[in-house]
Image (cartoon, rainbow, N blue to C red; front, side, top):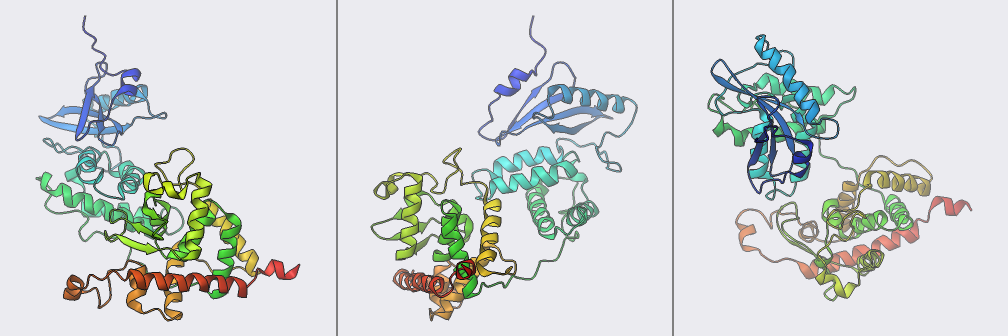
Length: 424
């Protein structure tokens, strides 16, 4: 006799994600219950029920330790009872239940979007998926994709911005942007949706650009705190100070990006924010820090070109960068205050980059060179037609600029010893 169970815990555990698109496995115990898996590997329970001649798809929940097959079957049975009694089975009170031919819910359509547009195509794929799973899916995931309105989006984004008792405007803007991007893609698949529901919906205004620049004394204290903290986070901060590159570019740098003989670090275009490869000359100070990192990682500099692993790698897996950055940054910031003898005004890791750019200007580096160091595609030298014909990479000029800056950092460290050492 054929096995009609369909879904079992063992079968679910052994499912392999498809290379593209998604797969579904029907349950043989509860009619209409299915497990869907996309290319991302996420397993989601759905209930498919024909109501008044139209198919209704409802996302029940994501498979995991806290929501197992048994939980899904129990919830599916409750929903089916509601259908038989003529009740709406939309998750949120007031949400519209709307029949649809092949449209599906936001969560279902997202799995296709993730496979086709995000995974393997965007550097921010993991972060994009995290935002969707944490914020969008719990609120809108089980709604039919073509039933979302502008007021739904406005209320949802406003809730993120203010519901936690404190303003989280930045995250609200991020969620709005992700949702809008998703619907721009989905719109051609939603026959009954006239426009992107995010258009003209409420979202927080963009915050004013930050202008925090560390003082010379603060730069010295930060360097001293980083030296004391050592590998890996202290070295990360030292590299930010000496190279002016972005935090993610340093964190995700692989060993084979470093050329010790040529004394350069090449950030490839697929990791650079603007998509343009950036050759970063290593000053004597930066080369010393990189050498220390390689030593701490147990990799010989002469083997760098043969190692594709992340240099500041997690202890768990060499394919991920080191974790625990937030905790380490708090520790380093506390150390900075101790060395200053007072509590410095708030600053972030990104403010280091602005500080270095300001420092380069102060020591006489031409703007076009400091912009090249930052890998900015801005300014008159890079704009319009000039940007098409001016292909000079300023490698020698960047090398001289970063060498001068490296020496300047050490001069500041010597000029401003830690406050606690002065008191001893």
